[in-house]
Amino acid sequence: MTNENSFVAVLKKHIESEQLSLPIFDSVSLRIQMELIKKNPDFRAVEKLIIADQSLSSNLLKIANSVRYRGLVETSTVKAAITRLGMTEIARIISMDINKKIFSSRDPQLNAIMKKLWQHSMGCAFAAGMLSHRLDFGVMQNEAFFAGLFHDIGKLLILKVIAQKKQKDPSIAVPDQLLLSAMEILHTEHGYLLMQQINMPQMFAVITRDHHLQEFDRTNYLLILVKMANHICHQMGIGLAHDTTIALLETEEAVLLNLGQSDLEEAVNFLKSTSGLTG
Figure (cartoon, rainbow, N blue to C red):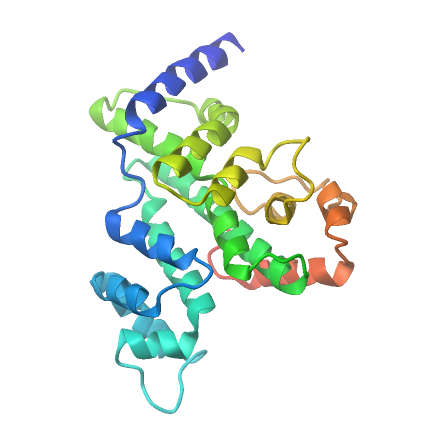
């Protein structure tokens, strides 16, 4: 416990010294995601930002012309792809593309952890988005999706800080269990500060801060949806934790949402069928 406390204290100092200068998102990806989280995203602004990223625009066109989405005529422009797919689907596709790149490291140990963290973040995003669409609590689907996506951003920040330190000093070695424990302790506080730093809307910052609290605002259905999505992913083993003992329909969040078996099964089945979220 002494070693853990010492490591957490040192890591906290490193995070506080690096947080203001460490880029988590590049400027284009941040601008795209900031536009997509709005209730009414600007179609033209999103189009211009996607076009500015050649890799992203190429991937979007490929998806728009895939068997699942293609129409009678091949889509050849980003504008046409957005029209064909719709803004909700665009948000999902772009988020998966952007964040898969961000959740990566040249360090094998950190890259393995980041991959699982990405799977968990996307799993929570999809689960929260699906539940918000199925249940009527006044939460827009894109709000629930992005709240789920960003809820553990503090863990990514911690991993980026460690990656930077290991790059400067390759001899640094941190056992997985010690690192995961420190991430669990620090991620809500520093995730909240990071969300404020990059000017994310306060409702998303609150999710990063409060999603593990036992005493929380039970009128905040966006928070409740993300907490429920978190339970689902943990029970399914999507991410860094796997707890098969969680009785999902008996959780307080399920009761507050009046969640039924069919609601749960739809979310679970979708996550099982979504490529890349497990393994």
